[in-house]
Amino acid sequence: MTEHEHVRVAVVGSGFGGLGAAVRLRREGVTDFVVLERASSVGGTWRDNSYPGCACDVPSHLYSFSFAPNPDWPRAFSGQEHIRAYLEHVADTFGLRPHIRFDSEVKLMRWDTEKLHWEIETTGGNLTADLVVSATGPLSDPKIPDIPGLDTFPGKVFHSARWDHDHDLRGERVAMIGTGASAIQIVPAIQPEVSRLTLFQRTPPWVMPRMDRAISGAERALHRALPFTTRLRRGLLWGIRELQVQAFTKRPDELGLVERLAKANMARAIKDPALRAKLTPDYRIGCKRILLSNTYYPALAQPNVDVVTGGLTEVRGSTLVAADGTETEADVIVFGTGFHVTDMPIAERVVGAEGRTLAETWKDGMAALRGATATGFPNWMTIIGPNTGLGNSSMILMIESQLNYLADYVRQLDVLGGRAALDPRPAAVDAWNTKVQQRMERTVWNTGGCTSWYLDPQGRNTTIWPGTTADFRGATRRVDLAEYQVLRPPAAGAGTGTAQRAEAGA
Ligand SMILES: Cc1cc2nc3c(=O)[nH]c(=O)nc-3n(C[C@H](O)[C@H](O)[C@H](O)COP(=O)(O)OP(=O)(O)OC[C@H]3O[C@@H](n4cnc5c(N)ncnc54)[C@H](O)[C@@H]3O)c2cc1C
Image 1 (tube, protein in one colour):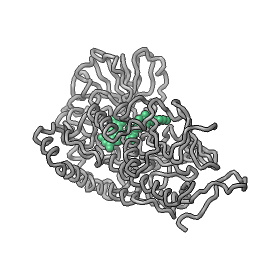
Image 2: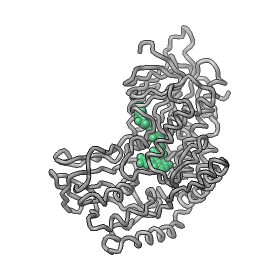
Image 3: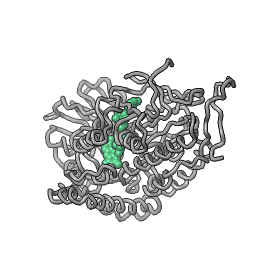
Image 4: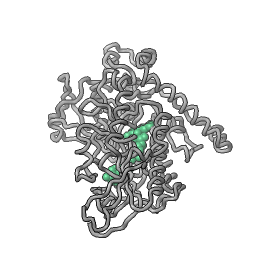
C-alpha cells in the first residue's frame, strides 16, 4: 500500500458501539481517530430498522448510555425514531461529527507485520491505523434464507431491516416469514391495513406482556430537575435483570412458573384451541429470546391472519409453499429472518498476521479473549464480539464494559511506549473460552431444547454471555498484559520482516 493518512485508532461502525468507542477515546485523551461508516448517517441498528412498530424491548432508561442519560424518553420502550434521534444527539453532544467518515465501507483490513499497523481499504479512501475497533454490529447484515424459487416471485420482497417505505401494503396479501423479535412487532403494526397476512412460523416464540407506557411530563420534569432520579431508575431496571439472569444461567428448571404466565398471556387473546396449540412453544422459556408484546396475539386472532407452521420451503411464482404443504398466494414477502450473527461478514475482510482472514480463523466457531481480541489479529478489537450477547438485558451495558477494556488497552499501549502491538496468547484465549463454555453448559440457552441463532452450525453457543452484566464488567475492567504477547517492530537491519515478540508482563 502506498503512503496514506495514518490515524492512531480507526473505529468501524457508528451505532451504539462505534459512537460509544469514539466518546471513550476522547475521554482517554485520544483525538487522533476516525469512525468509518458505510452508510450516510449514524445510528446502526436504529437507522437500518425502520419497519412499522420498531422499538426496543429493553426499557429506554437502561437501553441508553450511562454517560448520556436522556430524561426525555417518551415511552418506557421507545420507538426506533426516538432511539435514532438519541444517537444523532450523542454524535452532536460529544463533538463526534468531525471524526466520522460516512460512505466509507471497509472492504479490507490487513495487518502489516513490519510496520505494526493496519492497512485499511474503504470505499471512501484508504488509511492506516495503529489500532482498529470493529463495531460493525452483531445484527447489521440481514439474512435471507435460500428458498428455492424465490426468484420466480413476481411481487415485492424485502427484509425487515431494509423496509421498503415506498411500497404501500394497504389491501395487499402479505407473507411474513419468521417469528422473531422484529416479526412480532411488524405483525400487529401491519395487520389492520393488509387484506391478508400469512405468518410463516418455524418455531413459536414465548411472548410475555410488555409493560410499556408513556413517560409522563411530570416524570420527565423530575428527571430533568434531579438527574440522580434517572440514574436511580436505570439502577432499578438493571438490578431486576441481574436477578432474572440467575434463572437463565443457573436454574432453568425454575422457569416453569414464567412459562405459565406466558401461556396465560396467550390464552387471554387466543380463544381458538387449534391456534393456541400452534402457538405454544415446546421448549423451555428463555432458550430463545423472550419476546414482549401486548398486541401480537390479538393480531393473530384476527380473521385476516393465518399462521402456517413449518416455515417457507418453496416459492412457485406467487404461490408460497410451506413445510406442511400449505399453499398461500401473496403479493409481498417480508423476511423477518434475522442476521448473519455467527458468520459476520466483516470477518471475511480482516486479514491477520499469518495472512489468514478472521473468517478462516473462526471457521470452527468464533472465539475471542474477553469477547474482544483474537490471536493473530494484533491491535484489533471487536465490540459485541463472541459471547457478549444478552438474552434479557441491555446490550449497552456490555458495550460500555468493552469500552472500559478499550480504554485500558490504549493506556497499556501508552505505558509500553514506542511502537508496540498486543496479540492475545492462544492459551489465554483458550482458557477464557473454556471457562465461558463450561458456564454455558447449565444455561437455558444450551439446555432449553431449542435451536436458536445463539448457536453456530456446530451447535456451540458463541454469542451469549453466560453470566450477569456485572460479571462481565469485572472481567473487562483491565487488560491483563500476561494474557498478551507484546509485538515490537523488527530490529533495524535484522531484515526478518516479522515483528519481534517480547514477553508481556515481564
Ligand atoms: C430491530 C432490533 C431491535 C433491537 N432491540 C434491542 C433492544 O431492545 N435491546 C438490546 O439490548 N439490543 C437490541 N438490539 C440489538 C442491537 O443490535 C444492539 O443493542 C446495538 O444496537 C448494536 O450496536 P452496534 O453499534 O454494535 O451495531 P449496529 O447498531 O449494528 O451498528 C453497526 C454499524 O456498523 C456499520 N458497518 C457494518 N459493516 C461495515 C463496514 N464493513 N464498513 C463500515 N461500516 C460498517 C453499519 O452500517 C452500522 O452503522 C436490537 C437489534 C435489532 C436489529
